[in-house]
Amino acid sequence: MSIINYSAAKRLLVAARGHPYERDPFAALFEDLDDFAWSLVEQPLAADLLTPALKGRVDACVFYDMPGVDFTAGAAPVIPETEFQAAFLALLEAGIGCVFMHHSIAAWPAWEEYAEIVGGRFHYRPGRLRGQDWPDSGYRHQVDHEISVLSDHPVTAGLPARFRMTDELYLYPVFEDDVIPLLSSDYEFVDGNFYSASLAVAGEMYSRKGWRHPPGSSLVGWVKRYGASPIVYIQGGDDPAAYAHPQFRQLVHNAVRWAASPEAYAWAQQSA
Image (tube, rainbow, N blue to C red; front, side):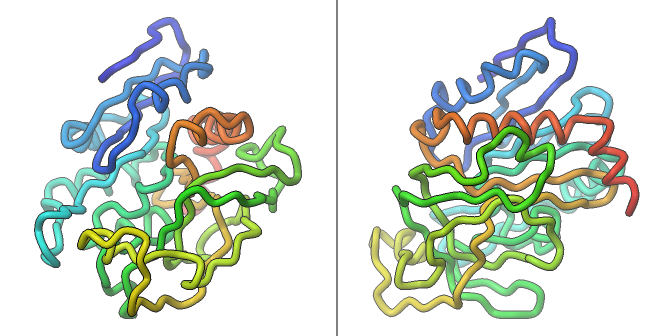
């Protein structure tokens, strides 16, 4: 599916799929981005575009995808081809603004560097990360929670200091020391409040039978650098109700506009 406003000044690639989602309500999330020509491209085709040749053709990318997770492959990890790894890393070293949303933090679990790009990893099955063994991660749908703005930043500009929304939340490892926190949730991120992702994959939805997980981070939004690229992660965005939430829409629009801005590129290149 591709929707393009050719009259806009900036260009945005939105990569999706790998996890069920409703295309039209999700696409509507970007309709108010009148200053962007944007294309929604689903995986696996989207992966073919993530090369250094993309720089100069688009100003930023949004990732709402989950490549590398194969629910039919048992416990076998799905490792991206070395050509894809090299091309994507070269693109990030060249500099491209990236906004990662929701389940994209579960992408490429067998490629550790991907977690370093985004700032953490959601595990559908137990895995190893930064030399530590982790249980499968936790999920909880339809959580009514309050989000607090932690930083005065272009991504949070115009948002109230606190706002409520109902959305899915995750319990998983976050590299808190490597990110600039923007948003936190008042929900308690402990295993008793979540369900096992691995059990869900096995067909036991909403179960935590025999499952344990260390307490997690309350961060639900951050920015960071990777190579010469500004990176934003937003944990929310599970369903059409979230897409239509006014503060969430503003948050996503702010993130896209900042990630594509000269200021964000200059900030990222300070450590490149």
